[in-house]
Amino acid sequence: MNYLDLLPEDVTKIINRKVQDLHIIQRRKERKENRKINREQKRKANRKRFIYEKYVKLYKNYIKNQKWEYCCDLVAMMKKEFGKEHLYSEIFIEDDEPYIISTIENNGNIYKIKVSK
Image 1 (tube, rainbow, N blue to C red):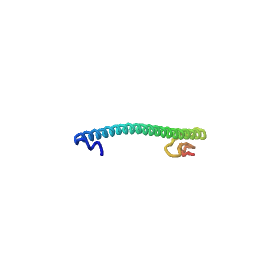
Image 2 (cartoon, rainbow, N blue to C red):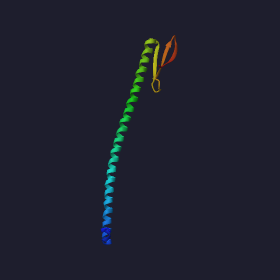
Image 3 (cartoon, rainbow, N blue to C red):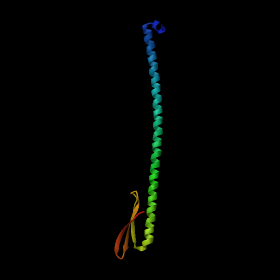
Image 4 (cartoon, rainbow, N blue to C red):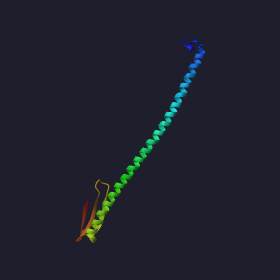
């Protein structure tokens, strides 16, 4: 036999309501804790994503600079090779393999030469 069975019905209702309120309060605290944990996890994930995006941007910038330097070396070689006959060069670094198109004047004729690796 249970001691709660001996209590009057109105007292058991009050006790049941208090127990239910305690469950509600406990559940509210759990939800609040879960929200706090979720915010922290989201903050960490955003930070990781930001660092990754920054790394990717730096890497792409590094690759672009390497391509630019390579093309500048090609232009310098073309100027050295053709001297005054070399008019100008256009640099293209957007492709996977960077290249230049040099315009050269030889005996009154204009030639365009594509130079790459």
